[in-house]
Image (cartoon, rainbow, N blue to C red; front, top):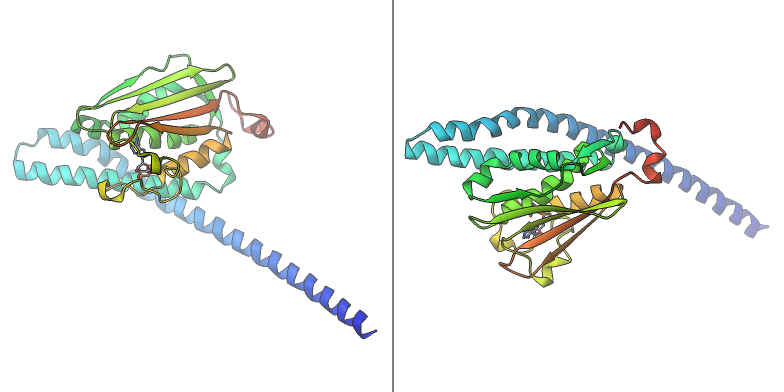
Length: 269
Ligand code: ADP
């Protein structure tokens, strides 16, 4: 009888514990959601005034001739664009867990969007005298959230530019694979050594800390990969090694698969 009582007591305790764990989990999830929402509000408020600054400062810089002022402006331009990229990264992380991530699915004109992403990087491209070639045919499209497309390609193209040498070429190509499309971003920059290549998609991983400047946090590729995975997309990388450039491939389905189609109301074409 004592054993039976003990068993019942243990089962009760177990149930109680279970209930408390579940309740605590819900509380934690709520708090995490509130934290993400808070970051999103603050992030947007921080990013909004930075966007015109990023556009207008290089313009002012062109008009200035005083060497001291030029140097000051160059540093300011770099700082402002670094802060903007960091805020974008933090926003991407905060959005990662929320469902509204896939609430804005529409037809993306790949070539157009890539031109836009390239023009967002105009200052650095100009500073490093890079040549960017967008070879995507006009008619190429995918169905996804524009915000997500920008997050993925913004990171891949941003890196190709960031890790390019002066006078380098960055080439963006596409291959039609029937129901999917493969985008390739090729640069002639610092490249990635074989021992680092499999780890570049890890959070906070930077292939060689010694060669990193400002604006490198080791998060961009991890975010790009996670966002691509929502669409069952795959990002791969190849590089012949240090100093020999890198090539990133993004394999995307043209149409969202059943996982996304279930949310039919969300798809606007
Ligand atoms: P980061 O902010 O450091 O660029 P990422 O997650 O975007 O973070 O990239 C992780 C690391 O992968 C980088 O720190 C860099 O070492 C390497 N990497 C990414 N893209 C390239 C590239 N195009 N060329 C050379 N190295 C790259």
